[in-house]
Image (tube, rainbow, N blue to C red; front, side, top):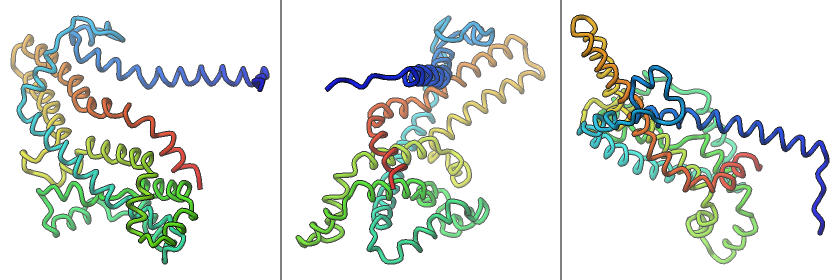
Length: 299
């Protein structure tokens, strides 16, 4: 079978696509490369604009100062625990809800879908939510971080659409004729066939938990329960505050030194907080075409 010959318009279209995608790639990846280089470069050279791609005057003082702080490790432990448990709770709620909403024989499906969708556009706001959390006695507990965000309607819609598009009704009917219950059908047939969408929403929820700090800022006052993002935020703020305070009367050399340290810590903190997600993403990325695209577009 001979290959289809591309017309001049097709070739021009492909060339423009390659140019645009290359520009987008450069725009997306350059800030990351710069931050990595700046985090291990001499801060003076960074401030002078001499570091724009590769590191210069390599030193790891920023990382040493960040990891020397014992609270960093406590924050890492807490964040890993919150991310793991929170993602499990998210999947436990999202997958059954999406599967139920994907079944045409689910009584009241449209009503529940309408109620769930309503929450995407309207919420009670910060103060009512805070009062509810406080009234339920969940302040200073991990449940204040995990329960209010147990399910995302956006992820439920994507997962429901995936189930509707990829789990044929004939398969469900055949399973039911063989005496398979709904629970067994969901656990032994639907879930094994839905690996791409499960991987995608797992990544979505895990990244959300990993980057979350505002909820902990509102509901958690015990330092031993702080997530990593809150610890890093405090380290960054404290270093900047120290620099500002020293400007009032301390020696100029000390001010300059503190400013240099603050710059190094700033870039190191960015890398420390994003490295786990960057490492995990390539292993899940292959499921995105099957998962997010099919789940979002079909149906």
